[in-house]
Image (cartoon, rainbow, N blue to C red):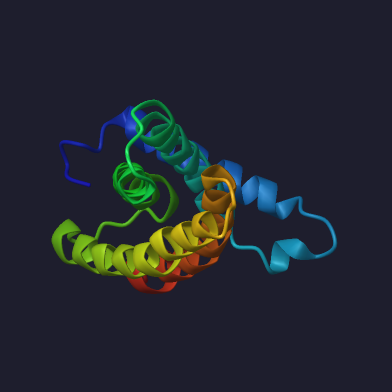
Length: 158
């Protein structure tokens, strides 16, 4: 964040989001609070939202505009991944690293994720007769594990 973008409202929203994640994780039963990081919860909240954006865009592109599944998945995912980066950088991992190199690493992670899980799994399941929305949900589960791991320990490390 630059000095210009560090408005009191933004800082307050970031701090409230972080406190919410810490408070919820602290109340997890069965000792899960010692295993689940607040950033995992934050990632889940942010990426659930951006996944919803992805699905709405997928529906609009394929269900309404009748674009081919690979194109619809690609456009929807591209929009959602950009939004996810910004929200996770600002709210969840509160990174102050230079955006350029960090975003370049994120793009590599996203390309690997996209090819392996989003396009690969979605297209394979659709080709096997699974409804494109259900196929996208299956791919999303694989994506979630991979992306959180990469964002926490590679993209936003330190």
